[in-house]
Picture 1 (tube, rainbow, N blue to C red):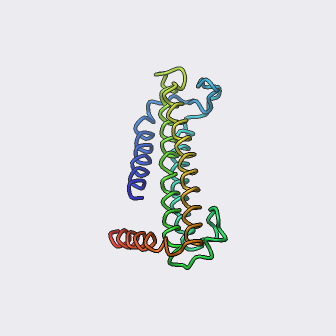
Picture 2: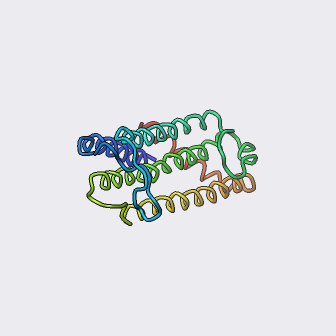
Picture 3: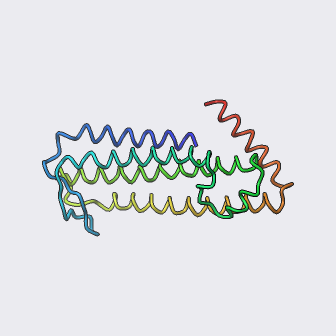
Length: 191
């Protein structure tokens, strides 16, 4: 989870710094929408340039806050086998909550990569370094979306299996929970 936190920080800092550094190079009107081929089809005032970094920052902060909220109120969590999850003792719920929170933080990484990619593409079209969003930008965005989809599928399968095993065969999950709890304890103690 720490790696995802660092990656989110680097992507957000890069996005914000890039947006500030190139501000004076931007024309008064910048592309605000692109067609399916990556050609700009509408423009807005330059002030809109700050919207994407602000949106990325707000969404990332909300995702991090949601991890704190879900830890305090697990009923807000949308997971498979939710009723079975609440049948588990509290100490066995904690590793699952930690896994869920890690998934939320990890999901912010491709989201921020998409925001950064869009901002660089808008810049290149706005300053006429390119006439359209190149396929490299579209490829990065598609790869990030596919990555998010695959992460979500893996998460749901793993969490579902973990909850099912904890309910049906608690003796088999005891060691898993002990090691996850120990790992969680060590991580929290470190920082």
